[in-house]
Image 1 (cartoon, rainbow, N blue to C red):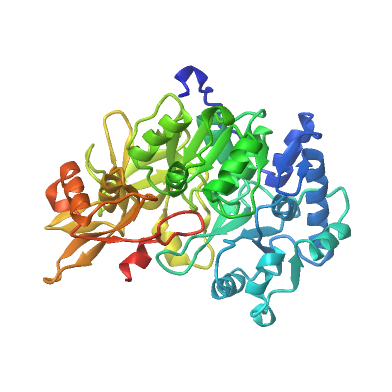
Image 2: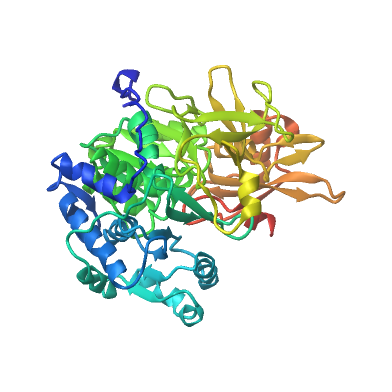
Length: 517
């Protein structure tokens, strides 16, 4: 059932991160001091690990890296599936002052070659199943000294370290970890985050906006290498003293339903395309089989029809929000007791938002503008990319590349990516708005809209549509449906039916691939 405002915890005061600070030490030690040593921190497909075991294994891994010759501020690339070894490696490196660089597990050999060279990582920690992607390039990586494979040499690294490891003398503004951007508009960018950022996102969003507590069990379909997943399954969980359920396999509806019914998570984090696929699956669990109290969506705007259908089927609202690799997690979100369909909610307390035009001037209420964010979790910079850093991080403000409108009540409505916007008949058209109208048709599962030139070289909307299993709809029917919902000039002039849409590993639709067709 929908949470009332009375169920929503009061926003705690922003955490004051001390000058001398090590994120891994804080996130684990706070749980040991609170007496949670015997409590499960993580479950994966093979077993569980308690907070005390996590502390020891992270210490051993960090100490093992130091024993192998790695030093403070060296980089170690993590290409790992979501198992208990992931937080052990990530936190162990950070405790030792070594910088983990978490990367997507679904990339090509060429992508990994670029990231190894760009980061100058001295060690690679890789899941055994992913090793074939790296083997062709390992000999020509001049900075790479150590290859650590889970299930074999990973245990050897643990054996080199001791059960105790003094945290490296880092401070809150030191580089702590990197995440590579998706690279949808060019080469991926190494986004550098400070030690203070993980606990800040946890205090402001997980504990402040969501009211996460130590009794919660958290399951995120978004993987740990993704900024969204890293917060959901690691920093949020450790900051609150909760328990996370990790899943190494792809987040198909069947895999998700299995965890929801067997592990009984109370918080679930997904993306719109996954929620749509879950709703279209005949094996969607009955309400009484679920223990959920909060569901969150991010990655792309959540169509209202998906949110309403999920509420009807699961008896629970989906809280739509938006974050970014650059801001680390969600800074704009609907919240329990304060939700409006078709919007991304309001600013998360602790963040300031503004909408500006192409000249950087504030836009009037109700008009479309680019979203800029100011808050404590902004990335420090893009590694080795001064031009992109200066263009994105401008003083206290971070440019999102997203278009939004804001209403009188402070709710923000998504208007598409800045580089996705279409000018049709001299008027700007948001692809997201057209997509939402298409998904509102009962036969449509997913839709993506891009620009295409007609015979006169004028740009018009083109839609790629995936129908629900067994559903039927004609091109003319869908065009007429959009015309009923939106201004006539916004309807898609072409509709192409597809069995699936190209997506990133985190579920975002890759419109640039559709534009290239």
